[in-house]
Image (tube, rainbow, N blue to C red):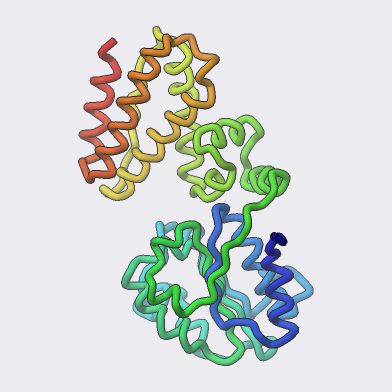
Length: 293
């Protein structure tokens, strides 16, 4: 089966006049999805210079905005001073007849905002290209999916992932530890900067605890935030701990039975978090169980 090249495919669609008005690009690497989306937007606009300088190109990036996902006010006008899609589409393009809007991490757009986006995606103004990127298709409503041309973006090569990791400021050591934790480089790059920094900060203590029986048990503290944020961070940390343990299984000083006991408690804790048990309570019980030799 031939390898799907989304950028070349989009350029072909553009040449024959069959491009869609809205695309939903789904894949495992958020930075790679952004690269593909930007390349398609650049081809659509016929831009020769950097897209940041193009007056008819707009990016809605929740990480830059300091939020977990776009909200209704980022889709339609609700608050003065908050940039939104509807305001960007009110006037004609400035540099030609086309404009492109990139909405990153569409899987984090809350349900109300997804609903507010439906009409715009279904009937955008002439000359408008909307590109949504997502790493989790299941979190995109069926109504929104049905209005987009959905593409599965192939995984980038190891070389591309390493280049993206370096561009994200990850050292070789941190990149190695995070890929051990999550299993795939795409998953590492799909994390927010804050989540990557959180795992890197936790790694040394957890690695020491895994390596030697006498090391104290980590507290698995998940920090501050609302219940959903703490639950997500707790599951991330516990899953990463299992990843680190699995990746170094044959190198640890722990007896196999003790390591299996620890892994069992970690897996049970993840199941409790997914069952909506309060994460602070789960972590507290986990630490007590792990300290019982």
